[in-house]
Image 1 (cartoon, rainbow, N blue to C red):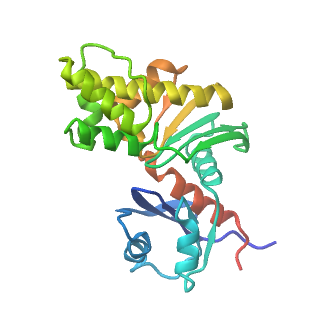
Image 2 (cartoon, rainbow, N blue to C red; image 1 turned 90 degrees about the vertical axis):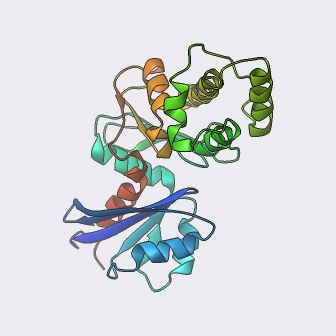
Image 3 (cartoon, helix red, strand yellow; image 1 turned 120 degrees about the vertical axis):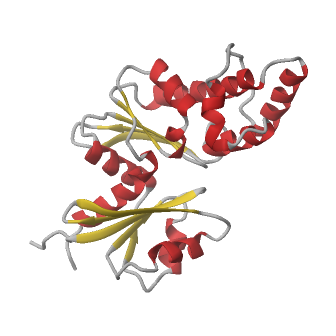
Length: 259
């Protein structure tokens, strides 16, 4: 039987950022992140420029672009569902439900005790409930995106935002401001609307704790607070929640027989 690969890399090409994890003998020895920009393939070349020709596994929405665009690399690809399941189970074997909110999609994955995918749902056809929605609304309220979650936590009232369409939500936010509502209250209302949509996905897929919150939106302080309120404790948030997919891709590569 072939031995597992000693050194392998995983790369997750998302809509806002690209993450890379290198495993050596099962341990993370390197991790990197660059913005995706308008040219993700060029950003991948930049990220990989000084790496040797390692076996590499790509995931994320740009995985096929990378496999086709870098034929000189020993590259395979897996789905985001596979990658996040592997990465989540490796970090927290006790996790039974994975919630990943990224820049362009939301995923909910039910895991068995052995880390196998039992059921999943993915919303990748609409910006509602994703990081893109938060980015759009932060811009509309003139708040820098990295500060948007903390800004929303300054609210003194919980408002109901009815629309999750970015265009209509902006119109609703503008109307609320015209009526004298504080921007922080509107920001909290927008976060609450995302949480309500997310909880509906969770109910359809899995309501089994512990819940693991991954993806770039897991950095948002308000989302962390609201989800922790809504879900059975504990809400697990990895130290680097947006690296889970790249880690899972690398773990998949390590499991494949050395060629």
